[in-house]
Image 1 (cartoon, rainbow, N blue to C red):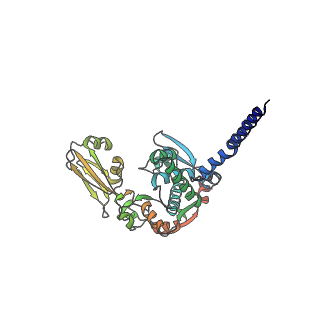
Image 2: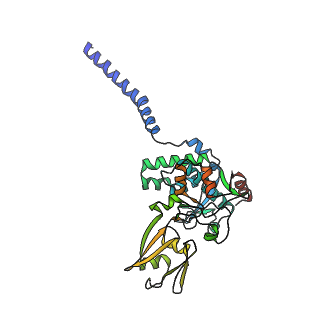
Image 3: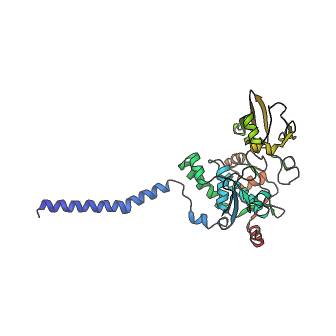
Length: 338
């Protein structure tokens, strides 16, 4: 073999070694660095939570089936559906406690609709909390934004693992809304009975936000289909209001609906709405998003951005309540076999 051939063989061998080194060492390192640039959840911490060891049964309206899932997964899906992707961590932590409390109370006292389906909760937003899967969120806001939001939501759930709100030793009715009308409602106005920790609370950030107002229009045909009504015109349609402005009932001739049922059937953002006719359409203007009870997520974002902790946010919206462990309540459910 000539010296030239020998030199060529040595160079080729050196190139192969360099490529092998890149494949085995540099390429994985590059991937690791790329992952480090994104918010990656700590999987071991996520699956070892107290929340992860509790199963909650959720009735899926679309499939007609009840499915069991870890409590932390349910909390995550509720946060993804209701919270702003840019919400401060303290606000997400407050929301995590509220959702966990809502779920634990439902496990103890399921609604008739959920109990009929052998479940604790439903995914029907008219009955329970709206939920959104990670895949649905990704389709909605894109992979990168979804990954960041999911990681932060998981961090908030982990930081509050197993903690719920109680009043007089029992899990509270932890209602919340996406944004209020400018004030949250009292239980007396919304439910017809007093609940000590559900008071009318001012929400100045909500009042100043254009996001609290939404509009929607209905043709007569679409209106009748949504409500199962038989109106021949919108003439005579009128609303009955509570003293805080929310609609208690809507009437048209011999037909009538509660304000909540009317809003839910039409997919209105809240029970505080006005309507006017415009040609063949009925135009709705809605104020707030959600029940307007308890915690306003939008106002919580504003409070958190000014340095308020999740504990202080919860005390602000649910006065007189205490943070406690969910374990005694979960154990009572497991013992009873519910």
